[in-house]
Each structure stands twice: as structure tokens, then as C-alpha cells.
Image (cartoon, rainbow, N blue to C red):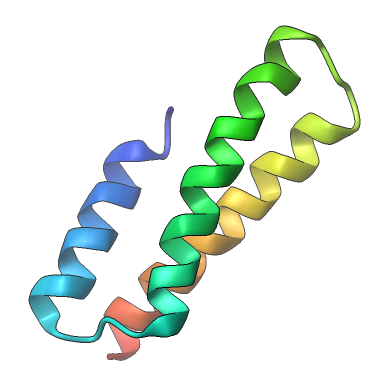
Length: 71
């Protein structure tokens, strides 16, 4: 969960800054879902799925940060 502190700050920041939208809500949900899916991929050593899921979570985090910075 190395990106959790950044996610928490971005998600809270989006709400506090008043820039929450359907896009940011979807990005937050995608981040949570991707991190949940990452755990079994990690535990069962699913080699090609693990980096894909991690990348999806990272992309969702970038969307949140972009909304926060640009909003």
C-alpha cells in the first residue's frame, strides 16, 4: 500500500477543494478496486496481471492528482 498516503491526501484534497466530480469519484473507486485486486495477484504470483493492476491504480491516482492540481 505504498501509494495509500498519496491516495488519501488526493481524495481528501479533491473533496476539500470542491473539485469532486463523477471522474474523480470513478478514479477513487478504480484505485480501491485495483488495490484490492492486487492482493490476490501478489499472493498467487500472477506475473502479468500484477503490474497491469498496479498501473491501473497508478493511473487512477494520477487522475485524482490532476483534478486536484488543475481544479
